[in-house]
Amino acid sequence: MSQQGQHSHFIVPVKYYLRTFIALLFLTVLTVVIAQFNFGALNLPIAMLVALVKASLVLMIFMGMRWEKGFTFVLFISSILFFGIFIALIFADIDTRKQTDPLEAKPFGLVSPVRPISSGNGASEHH
Image (cartoon, rainbow, N blue to C red; front, side, top):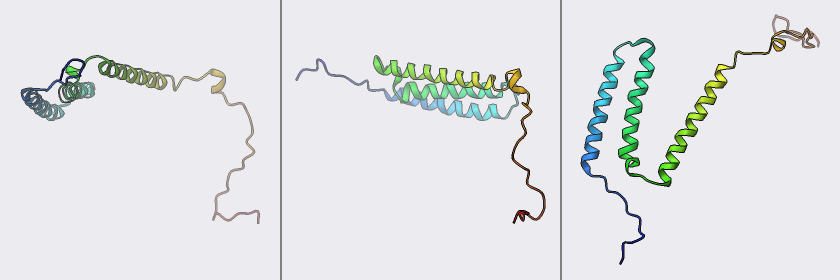
């Protein structure tokens, strides 16, 4: 039988898995060590950077994206792009939450037809 036209799958050598495993163990220890110190406002960015490196290792080696080509890679990049767009829209929404139109900021002077409940034992006075 001919092998032409068939899709071949890259077999990842064991050394890649071992090196990635050791790197993930090192980064986990690094995460624990970093958590012992207070970097102030940099706590979150440092933690996210270490998490990004760990996630990238898992994605590239264990999930095989390092060796992917074509449509799978395009799907991955487009999903990351759309995720970034959605996060940017969320932050844009959060940024504009406190902004109101000056006309909307003033009460209109309407009297509510709802009467407040009188304090007491909870029994209705209208029976």
